[in-house]
Structures are given as structure tokens and as C-alpha cells.
Length: 254
Image 1 (cartoon, rainbow, N blue to C red):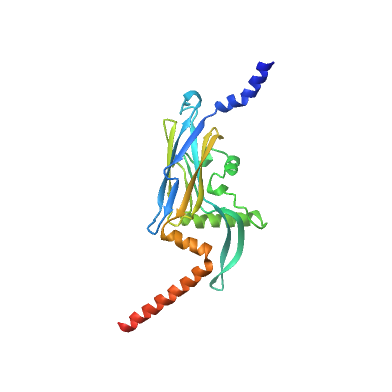
Image 2: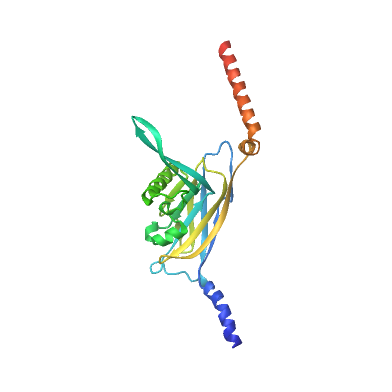
């Protein structure tokens, strides 16, 4: 009886050990933004540890990797412009409670060939599966239109990125992918989630954190603007006056 109870207690551990494990890492855990920052390229790599070291046959039991990098979320308001009497004016608008400031997804194959729509929605795999949390209730068509507009805008600025076939898997064990980081990337705590997918199911997942912060003079200016906004504003106005007066004096002299 005791042996049977012991086997029952160890069964979940034995089943868990039968699943593969991801060991991910990133090339930079900390990214400093200085005045000369023009962007960066983030290398995400790692290994897949299979039970007892038995790698499945790639031809029969292919595994795929999906990597999702997210920045901190923020509330954002999207406005739609319309042309009225030849003038572009703001028309409808929609506010979102939380939208990622940065989002990038890379996969070993196109996402629609790896997982179904339900799994993509659960893990937010793909730009068309982001959970943006609208603040007000509107029709599904309106929400879809504004969500598509927000995604398109940030995609053109390099803040949203999707690249199928960007993950390279070597010998079914090692993987790597490169994610571009634009120059206007927001600061904060980022997460890099790696998913191992096989037969449409997520078998393993692992997360690594990335910190992006301002450094040097840019950090001083940002901290001053956030923690001493009144003094920062007065200094900015005074500096503008001095520079304007100096430019005028030089113009009159020459």
C-alpha cells in the first residue's frame, strides 16, 4: 500500500521529467541608451533538453520554436482622422488600457502552420493576436479597425515586429534568432518568452528579462523631467530664452 501511494505521489514528477526543457538566454540582459544610440540587435539563443537526451527524428516529429519579446505596457489613445471639407480632422477615437510599447515575435516557421488560433490567442503569438484591452465597449468591427491602425503605426516605427522563419534550429537541439531593437525603443523591463511547440501544442516555455534604460546625460534629463518637472520646465524656458537672445545678438553683429 505504501509503495502504491509513493508511486502516485511521484507520478506527476515522472510525467514532468518526460517533457523537454528549454534553456534560453539573450546576448544582452541590459541595454543602455546614450546620445549616439542608433538601435541594436538582440540575439536570443538556447538549447532544448530532451528526456534521456533522445532527440526526436526531425522528419517524423518536428519541433518548432516561437520567441515573443514584449516591452512594458501603457495606456494609449488612438485617433482616426477623416477629411472634412478638404481638411483632415480628428474623428473617432479609442483608448486602450494596456498595450505593449514594444512587441516582436520570431518563429521557426509561419505561425499559422505551427499552432491553431486558440493557442495563438492564449500566448499572444502574432500581431493579430495581441490583447489590447479597449477601455470602452464598441462593436467588434470598430475594435478591429482601431487595433489594426495601432499595430500598423507602431510597425512602421519599428516598435512592432513579426518575422516567420527567423528562428534557426540546429540538429533539433540548438536554436537562435535575432530581433532588431529600434533607436526609439521605450525604456523599461522587457520579457523574452520562448515556446517549444510540437504537433500544435506548447510543450515547454521559459522567460528571460531584459532591461533597457537611458544612460549618461539622457538619463539625467529623463530623471529631471520625471522627478523635478517644475524646475525642468523653468530651466528649459530659460535655456530657450538665452539661446534665442544669443542667436539674435550674433545676427545683429554679422
